[in-house]
Image (cartoon, rainbow, N blue to C red; front, side, top):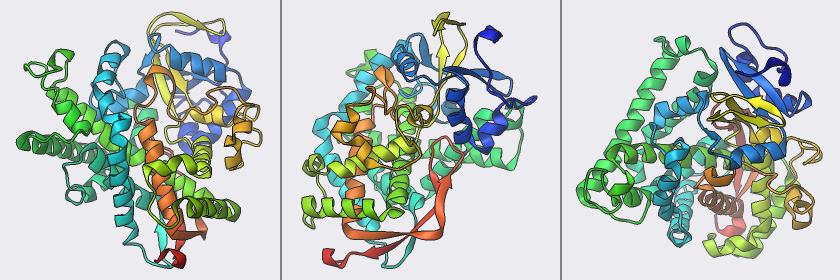
Amino acid sequence: MIDPPSIPTAPGSRPLLGHGGALLRDPLRFLSSLPEIGDLVRVNVGPFEWIAVCDPDLMLHVFRDDRTFDKGGLLFDRIKEVTGPRALAVMEHADHRTRRRIVQPAFHPSQFTAYSQVITQQVSAVMDSWRDGQYLDLFSEMKLITARAGLLTMFSYMQPDLVLSQALDDTIVVMDSLFRRTVAPTLLNNMPLPANIRYNRANQRIRDLVDRIIHEYRSHGVNCGDLMSVLLNLGDADSSAPGADEGISNADIYDEVTVFFLAVMETTAALLSWTLTEVAQRRHIHERLRQEVDDVLAGKPPELKDLPDLKFTVQTLQESLRLHPPVWMLTRNVTADTELLGRKIAAGSTIMLSPYILHQRADIFPDPGRFNPDRWLKESVTKRPRNALLPFGHGARKCIGDVFGMTEAALVLASIISGWDLVPHPTHRGRASISFVLSPRRSLVRITARRTHGR
């Protein structure tokens, strides 16, 4: 499919596995080494061949041309095992624009005031269970917050405690399994191994839960203006309901709800837990954040109107997204013969895009391994190429929930910093997990209530 001399191959490919072993052992190190090999690098994943894009301008070109470089590839095949084939996040170009227009009202700015109130209520509910001097596992606690907030903003009719406990455990199993199943041989994925059995059972329970949410909305005629209401009010494809001619069937609703159910919990939780891990380890950043939230909030819970004044809070989240992008690897399917940098790329090839590769380039971000929120001061941003930060993708396929995710993360971070001081555990400071979403595991902090805030 690809002219072998035209694109260099990453070293270390092994029989049968290709570079799958390196991707499983230390994927971030493997990815960060690719730009030294070339702007385009061939990577073997088992019997499959991917072309990794390492040049920033080329990456933007691939993101923008979603007709030639469509959603697809082995990674998205695995995601479809969970979400189904008709979710916006995995939908092919031919249907994507219509579906995005249908889903967009759930993410209109007019909805965000209500959403922000739910988010602050849920973060307060979780923080009320924390105790002075307690050690917290950050990723677990952030998943609890984002799950509660996500369920009540996307599916606001539901009571979170009714669905949370099992959903959290099943989400961890599914998301941890997706990356492993992507780089592992298909034969291995189909064997009745304990990991595959756990994955299949967790996947089925998530699907049963989504069925239950859909049934609750339908049986009670709910219309809350949330994502579920927007989708259900369009009706089935074979009904006479408004929007039915645009192809929203029960199966479509099912797939859409499933992907958002997973996404709102996992990716924002990863962003928050990485951010708090980095902040806890850097006292000077912790103190700057605390001073900002004290000045802006004056002891009250954060509101949507406060976000423009929480500039350093947003910078800190941006730097966390640069260093630890939750969605750290994507694939695209080449739909027609084309060229990249003068190299012929055949239809059917798979392109690999990694925001992590771009964010680790020293020519764009000097000293890229250092956590430095001041990279996002206005004067620093103007010196870099536009769109140098791509944690949500780019172009027409950019994540539809990017503003929602950043709004939620800023509100949660401000709430936590306002009420608690964080001290990292001496040994459990978090390391990246090998998962579809880049998240820290065993990142522990000791929390101390800030007495000046009445805790």
